[in-house]
Image (cartoon, rainbow, N blue to C red; front, side, top):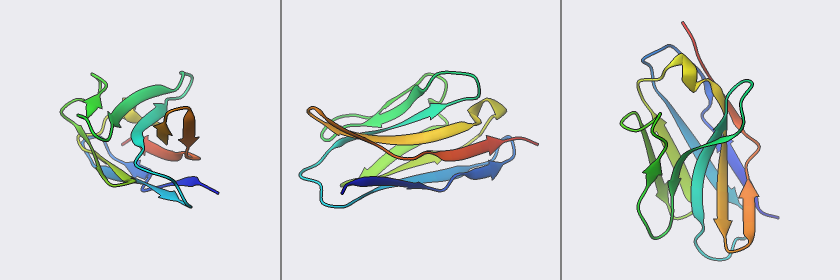
Amino acid sequence: QVQLVESGGGSAQPGGSLRLSCEISGTIGGIYDMGWYRQRPGKQRELVATIPSPGNSAYADSVKGRFTISRIINTMYLQMNSLKPDDTAVYYCKAWRGTTTYWGQGTRVTVSS
């Protein structure tokens, strides 16, 4: 059974940093496109960043210059710097290939002073 396991969420002060990780566990065939999404309180889930394989990374305008997405094969990371209170959300990782899509369970990030 394939699972996406996220880690690294928690609390940070404005201006601080956190690093999220997403690991695909189980047997998965091939290399998947991967990305991070988030759901802020009272809002719909939104794209944060994607890192296809192969391909170039892409970011939401709201996180450009502050967040960096990276991966090693099917393990993905999100380095979040210069955090703002508006980054408070549950962050989800997603992996997809063709018609197959997997979601992680989400990891909460809270940014407050």
